[in-house]
Image 1 (cartoon, rainbow, N blue to C red):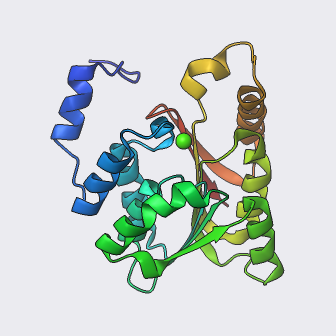
Image 2: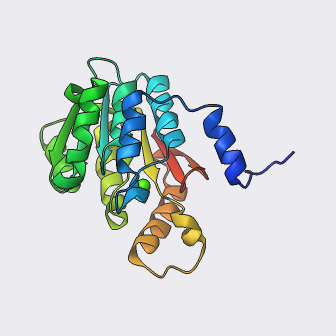
Length: 219
Ligand code: CA
């Protein structure tokens, strides 16, 4: 028995997946298609995708934002959890990476829910704000360039309704946040983690799952 989070051995991790993972065939196929990719570690873990899908369903979310699509697994997970009229604005700058995603979004029947915007995410988020969409979104997932996180967080906080949820990925940076920062990405997340700790605009939970997942609920 332990009152702190377990160290996850390979055996225990396999057990977790073996006893909880429920993937759509398109999700499994997309993971397989990304496995050999040079930047495959940018894909979220499947249990994280399933966790975010559960959050989306718990909230009854309809309008969602994703900052950082890569090959589209997290977008697929969220889109599958949205209702038929749901919409996910998915922001990325890479046509190459996101083009991997499209056939699998089609296979899962969610391509129509995903509004992919190929542009710097901060520009896309600002355009949503300019279009008067502040307060209209329920859920946002931020998983892109770490130096940009703070700006994405601030824009998403404006776009979310009260009670909406921002999920931030990689907030533990392989444990490097607890050490002296030696790269700008880690330094950016250290600063953001300190800011979030004190940010009374949100309710907060930092989860040591995957590479660190922080949940911030807009008050
Ligand atoms: Ca990530």
